[in-house]
Image (cartoon, rainbow, N blue to C red; front, side):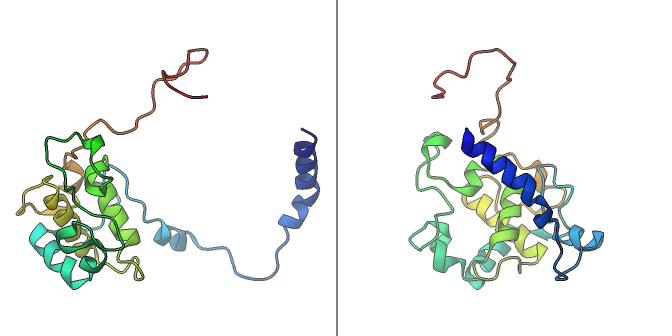
Length: 185
């Protein structure tokens, strides 16, 4: 407890040091901040214009070198995780491997991840059409959409993901109620 008080006092005393400027850099403009805000929510309203199909995505998967890390058709074997489950459709979703296109509650999450994090070493370099196509390919590999479905700003948020409503939602918490059954703390 005494150490917490000491930390609080040091923060209060040292807070003026945190407020100093050193003449390096500048405050970013609103446009610069907006350009960095690339978050895509479940509704997809932030998605850019573009389109893509699984067939186009399969070609890009080879061209961009995704096979080197994720294996042929995303079945794994490389240094990166598999992108499609080796377990059959009879296996419940939670008993399958952690596969992004299966465990994501929203198709826009898959698009967002690919846009931000792929390809490794050249993150953020994919064009919107390429991201739509690769997303379509991964969703097709996991039997979420048909091969000929076109994904775009309007259709992507409407894709029904295999996890459905079974993802980790917060329970209805009310003050002075018992903890969830099995909660260890």
